Amino acid sequence: MENNVIKIRTLKRKDRVTVTRMIARLAEKLGDTSLLNLIQRKDGVGTAGDQEKDTGDGYAKLGMQIIKLAVDNLESDIAEWFADLCDCTKEQLDDMPLTAEIQILEQIKNAPEANDFFSGASRLFSSINGSPNGSQTGNAGSDSETA
Image (cartoon, helix red, strand yellow):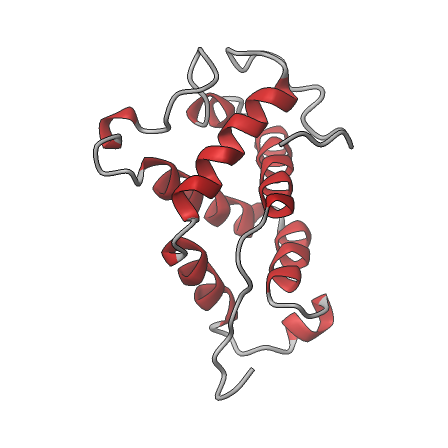
């Protein structure tokens, strides 16, 4: 990290699994399953924010809103993921400048693969959830990973 500039690695499949699990934990913690319904259509394969389908960034915008909620509610999970993205430990992340989270969020949002990443997270969540209408969330935090 030079001159307080933080760089994250490319988003990978394992990040999609991590975000999917955080979404399920966040919905459980907030006691609000409407969050789960936002990230999947009844057929389980549609786009988030269908009104933004033509611009191609509906999933990325929704994904960033969810990550911001997670930053506020799942600090430990987010810190672990952000540390992994920065190739450092949680302790090293804690020693980074105050702008670290903002820089990381901006890089995630601006990553060329962001829309594919978040649309894949939605499809993965639908698969793990096992229910096309979002009514069953019991398996969302299990250790089985599919992509």
